[in-house]
Image 1: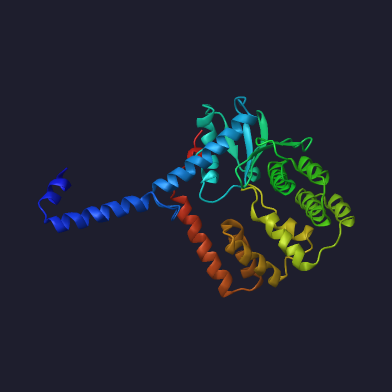
Image 2: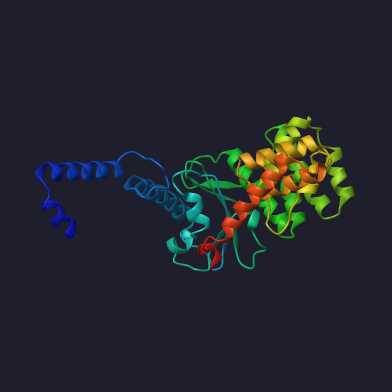
Length: 314
């Protein structure tokens, strides 16, 4: 009101100029999408639309969840819809189902479940897919045929979570019984199984798996290893065993550096930091590795100061 009184005392030309600016800003805030981090009506509208589609998909597949259900959730829908942060950090399923006992976790972070556990995929187009890890049967809320590669990514991440929570046998069994569509994925699954066996000190079993697995060219092995090591359980790291299972020497400085660079470029901070340490051990005083180490450490320190999300609150 005070601003209005102040404006009224100004010359007419000034009043018109101020009102024109106000109108322009109002139209801008309601216009096309801009920076997704800006507080604009268009951004809020996009997030609301995206979340409503996901919520509808959940309710079509799951009218209700049993109390204390652990929802192992692979979110492949990224970008301006903010699905990722709402599902994990804000634990929006607790609001939708009015149940504080529900917990949505990334597949790599799953824990041994005391109660029910469900594996769910949110696809890039925000469809919701239920996957049964025992039978590998998948059904989508849209009733369309689920995409194999999207489901494979979710199941592979779930296997990582199984191994990370002390269920290596279940992880190995799952990987060795996945339906295969090409030799490349077959090799990845078998080498991941060997990686988990190596991590459990079961070298003979790991070697038996690798003996019947096709050899990989070095470049392809590195590309596969990038995807495998990018997201791992916080409480258990498979870097050493992954290098071994994929046939990459831990002393291969060029390979370790290439992996470090890829993790940095893709924003995988923790693993980039670990591989910078590897490069520094192999090449003491390496300027690139030191710069990566400092930068990744700074990012992790900044994250420590962020307020906890709903996922950190029981």
